Image (tube, rainbow, N blue to C red; front, side, top):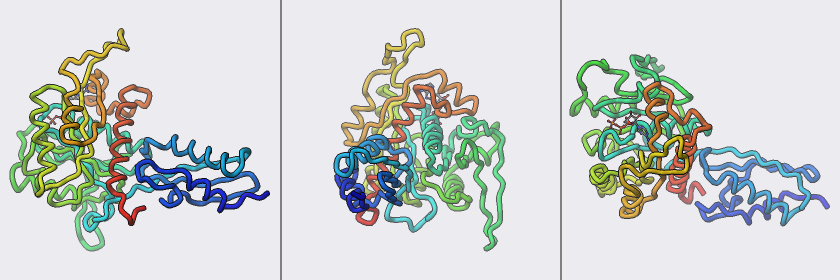
Length: 358
Ligand SMILES: Nc1ncnc2c1ncn2[C@@H]1O[C@H](COP(=O)(O)OP(=O)(O)OP(=O)(O)O)[C@@H](O)[C@H]1O
């Protein structure tokens, strides 16, 4: 008996996306279904290339078709993604999701996390930009090997000048550090800093982006207010280390995003420098700075805990040499960043899911 597309779609109605609590057909995630004899081909369109449930959904589709349609079907599933965006896209229409990376304290690894998240999402196939908005000490030029680089500009047909982000590792980058002398004291203050930051968003040729990651300055200051009040933000990721002093400041940072006047979704907490594992004892974890503080903070604020990043020499070396460690796909640290990036992208997709998207 010939297999019909109705039979295949009926089978796929049994596969539910756990995040959206609806089946793949209702969610309009099945595209380009073709059937030739026993050969069934279709595209499964996810809401992010970093989807952590890719393999699970593929297997569920295979099983559903084999069980409900034909045991001996020859099934070909092509997985793609179309990153969703929040309903309010009045500004910066081509930038789908702005994700802030924030910390209560300096030096906890916020720039490291922002850089490696950008690298991970870009490697998954997403269109990614990174703004280094750290007025006190922009680190992105160093972390991407771009110290001294100067972005060029182009004029639009309407006579507007647009800054061209510098591209490295498939990521479009702009840093306040590109516009200042690295050996001079920090010149960014007050309204000048706020205007400079706004320009990085408004007056740059970002093109289409799935994710624009923003490395914020530490703490809670003018830059945070400027960005959160000027642009639609998909969410904030909070980076902390396990020490009590870091956690106390992180608590304030987290509370800021939850203030009614700011009200930005907190996508979760990352605990950086969570533990140390010596090379000669790969199964041992030493919790040098304390244990589970980030997790407890996430629980207290009822936000997701996104994961732990260990203390790894390669992270410092990668940061200093302009090659973020996530570029080395074989490393355990890259796997930790991949898991965290997947959770962030997943959380963004869930937040974006409105009746329109579904
Ligand atoms: N998990 C880690 N293991 C080893 N070194 C790390 C780790 N995370 C960050 N580092 C290193 O710690 C230093 C500070 O990190 P980073 O610049 O990312 O922090 P930050 O929070 O952005 O700091 P600031 O707020 O001052 O810009 C860098 O040298 C970085 O390479």
